[in-house]
Image (cartoon, rainbow, N blue to C red; front, side, top):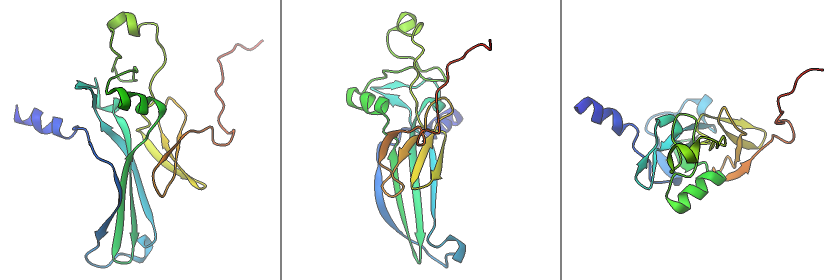
Length: 170
């Protein structure tokens, strides 16, 4: 029972976002790290309105940044605020199906013919040009401001991504 409780605590929803918290660095920061920023993306919201997601990989993406400089570090963390995230945040309810089994309310009839999935934008993060992108394998990347982590919406990478419909060769 304790092991199960300990395991579940690793997947508790992070209720807060943080903007540029100052952290002191004790010791000497290696030269190679000075002026650099480390980014990470992972699931961090695992329920809506008291309804737990079916799988932790359905959790909403949460991007963190750690900027390092002489003797100081700055840490920020924000949810990737996709349109689906904002809709569910406003209603505090699960409104979308997700890849690993979370279903919207209404049972089989509400979900059986609905092939639209919510992008949790929770898989990885990539700096490309002047944008940071939150990634998910089954949908478009979401552009973020690398300094504030503010979500700027889904991106096609300047026309570099196109959704193709399956077709048969003649």
